[in-house]
Length: 493
Ligand code: BG6
Image (tube, rainbow, N blue to C red; front, side, top):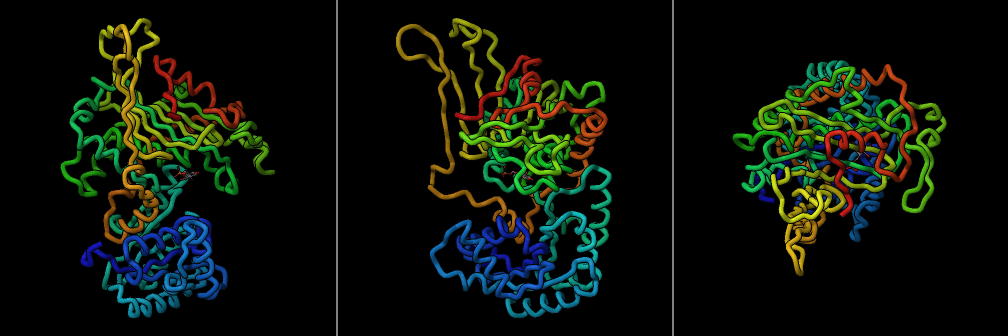
């Protein structure tokens, strides 16, 4: 990275003893340091309640980096840039000490007063921390100050609005970086490029030529250690309100007039404003929820959701959600965007499938069932790339068509690992590029849409469990497409 573009900053992580910091943030910072040659350009202050010393903190950082990357070199040069401050985040008085540490480190590291406050904590603390930072002078620096916030951003539109008001009392919208880690994924960022840099796709990218779009993000893991969070959230809040709708917005947006964050966001916001809200009597035609029962995944027997932890034994939380999203605008009128996401499904994969309309008269098939529409797969995980299904002549006598597959696998091209989403997002934030973070308008509009469905479900008793672990979800999710004459395209090649 050129020197002029190398951001210098102090990264202050609230929740530094927590899981996210260990699993994602420390390894990402290490990667930034190694691969972008940014060591020495920043220092990290970790904040937690525990009375740790710098050394204890550095050991944890070292351990977490080793778990993720197993580097061979000695990490002490790297971890020496990590400092620990024990702090009760709700106690305004204790921020003075933090202020002093920050000022001292800024002198030592010459970080020009640039401060990134990363809140890797439960959302109930976001407001109080933001205000304590502002009231104790931590925002008053000669450089930039930015606030990075993890999800969940609220539980519904109302709580998200309250949370936003609290944060906005201390920070401006352009200082707030709301993380949706899907927006940091290489192939999610590639959606726009694939669309807007290829005439062969973009000219066809509308309701005249596209039959439907399918977004799948399936996970084979269960609720794991997160029962307390997950059981009040469920798949719809955990995945649909953010990751699924964000991917749909990228698939559906108009080309922006340029690549500035404001222009891109404003096109996404227009899509979200056009989402057709679900009415009470039509929820079953548009949404399906599910909860996993026991089953088998990779030859292992796994328990039902209700048996995963004692407090889940009569839970009605959904671990799966599928939806048919209609976007009422000129480009998309009439085209269903189907999505599905859930835990304990057959496989871990995230894929987008664009199904093109078939040609009016296809001479090359004997039976209707042999027809194979053109499909574009955008593969986000585990493979990263695109696959295009075309029809070509079956080799040999006769003139029958069969589907052939053109694949581009981005991980295979240069043998590089895709940088972790978090690494890119941390760097973007340091560079002041908010493109891949969610603006409040997007958060508000996605909650408005999702809230409707959740409110209707709240008053209806689900019949759970309704899908087996290791399957692709409840049968009703297949019917959601079958009613429209479609089916889910398989996500395993
Ligand atoms: C998170 C959810 O946002 O995304 C998790 O809270 C989920 O429940 C995770 O497991 C999935 O992310 P990825 O990148 O593994 O698809």
